[in-house]
Length: 115
Image 1 (tube, helix red, strand yellow):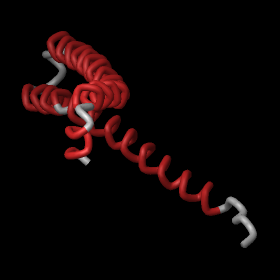
Image 2 (cartoon, rainbow, N blue to C red):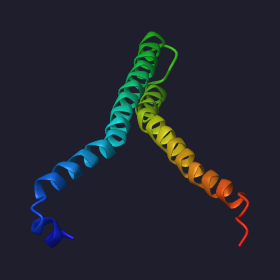
Image 3 (tube, rainbow, N blue to C red):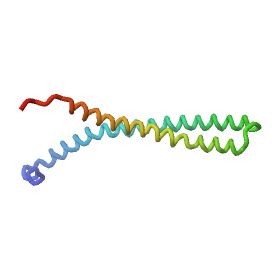
Image 4 (cartoon, one colour):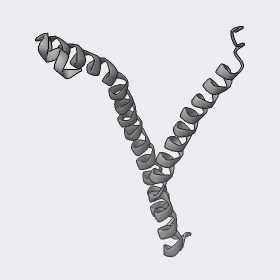
């Protein structure tokens, strides 16, 4: 434990070793955060394009569309961002959960060693 590390005056060596292990372990987390940010920017861009197209169509067809219908269309279009984010995150969580199930299934089918 810690008392043995201090007794052998190896605190610096274990600190550096632990920091290197933490850096190695955090690589996957940073990659995941970066991928999430990249995805959120793309989803926001898609949602903005959909909203711009709907807004343009509402303005161009203002004589044929009632104001209440135009407002309803635009308010539903605003919620597309949340829907897309929810859909992508739910799909990713489901896939991650199924990965665990696949591992359990694989390891349950491995033949056991004879006693």
